Image 1 (cartoon, rainbow, N blue to C red):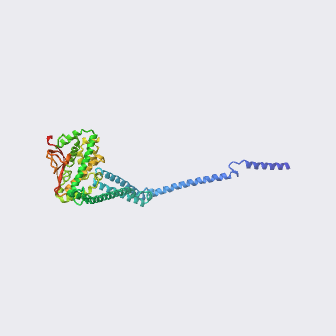
Image 2: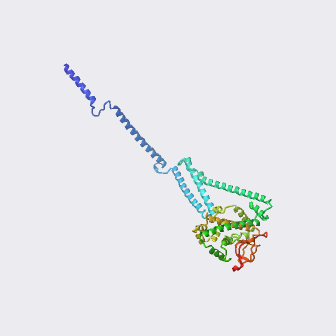
Image 3: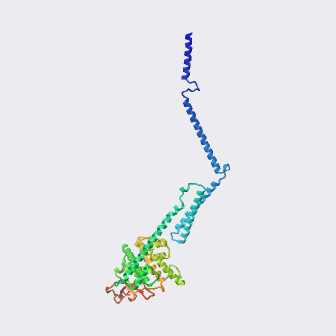
Length: 463
């Protein structure tokens, strides 16, 4: 009996051990309990994420349906407003582009009327864009106000450029006033000296130059001296270009004198500059007796002579302190600009420019309504400005000065002529006659005479 009980206990122990060490199918032991719980939690998290994604998609779909007006597919008021604003923005940008192209076209050739219209159109479209920007922000579309550049940022560079120009203008005016004050003080100091005093006419003229209040013959005489100086300077520049281009100067002088119909062909080569200056002055003074150098068919000087004289002197005062290149850079097609272009084309013909400058680019620019920024053309502009100012003064005087030229073969008259050829003792010997005229003379209302400059030759030269 004892052996039998022991045997049964042993069997129960073995069965329990087997159950603990060998899991039955579908049953998990106590040791794997934690792993099961982790897997269950992961599965629950995944299910929750999927549910959230589905819910988000459903919410987005609901929002889209609300924006589109629900299942019916209609467009909401908010979307319609945004589409309307964007359409106007695109139209306004296109209009700005068109207006800016018109503004560029008005600069070349320079047209002030077209420029004002185009400038107003550009400003109007920019203001329209500013209003559209405000509407866009007011309706709550797009980025915040801080992210959009205001209209002032667009206009700021132009305002800065305008301020710089105003500062430059004030500086120029201050410089002019300073120079005028120096001129007046110099005149006053010089008036007390007894030696080497200028004539009374010269002193009066110099004082007038500081701030001319009215046109006078003395002022005209002074500006005629400026014309002579500018003429000599441009002639020297032109003659140096001829020599650099290896021109036959003697042949050129013969062509100039004979082409002008007023001179002999046998002249001292040292005086070629006078022949070239004669050619230049003959071209630039042609038409001086007309109120516009025959540029326009105006009769204002006959219909309203007093108004015309005032306008001439007003233009003279406005222009006399300006650099011609700066003036034409702003108003290339003004009356003076057309005068300068016409005279340049007359003085420097196409073949001459091609030979001297290696091409006709300057000529093309002048014919196109612009003015080159070159040294040669700048030298010519100084002569053109001096002649133009003299012309304005002439038509501002009452009566206007009468100009004259010495004719070929005429006896030398010291009262009306000045020889460019210098002689010992300062006097022209008897028996000399005019070979050709270098620059014209003028007879003024006060009885004074600006003598014509002439090249004299012996009468034996077949004149």
